Amino acid sequence: MSEIIIIAAMAENRIIGRGSRLPWSISEDMRHFRKLTEGWPCIMGRKTWESLPKKPLPGRPNIVVSKTLTQGSETAVFPSLEGALEHCKDSAKVYICGGGMIYREAMEYADSIELTLIRAEYEGDAFFPEIGSSVWEEEEREDHEKFSFIRYRRRDTASAEKLIKEA
Ligand SMILES: NC(=O)c1ccc[n+]([C@@H]2O[C@H](COP(=O)([O-])OP(=O)(O)OC[C@H]3O[C@@H](n4cnc5c(N)ncnc54)[C@H](OP(=O)(O)O)[C@@H]3O)[C@@H](O)[C@H]2O)c1
Image (cartoon, rainbow, N blue to C red; front, side, top):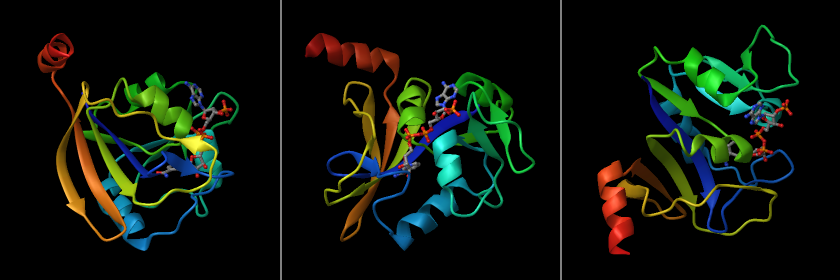
């Protein structure tokens, strides 16, 4: 079984995208994304794939989830997220790289979330889902002037149930 890791950059108002683009350009975040994901399979939704300025992301198997896209030479295409995850099951790690629709669906499978939290609000039309504290705990945090790199890890079921009872 792979470790399933969601990787995303989100503004304070949960925006992750606007009209198929990132609303910001932060080179440190792009480097962070590349450093973490390089060498590992990257699963993304069809709209995110289409929005990539350069395809495929180099040095990583690019895997697209779509019911409409046909298999191309640059990427493997699967008609479901579960099918894409199954395809990657022999890899120690797999990264879920967006966008909003895929993040929402992947929250139930993910073991951890690598979140870049940008300390500003942006206009946009794609959002990151809620990261509920009964399910996720902050494991590591690196604060920078305008953003933070935060790693969340899924709480084990026992402690999540305990929290619910205590609430
Ligand atoms: N800030 C970040 O970290 C970040 C990262 C990535 C993307 N983004 C942004 O997110 C936005 C795109 O997100 P989005 O929600 O609009 O689109 P998306 O999640 O990238 O792609 C949605 C498409 O993926 C396919 N899909 C999703 N779930 C599926 C399933 N269960 N089975 C089969 N196909 C499935 C469908 O393609 P078909 O219609 O072809 O079936 C669907 O239309 C853009 O603005 C992008 O810039 C931000």
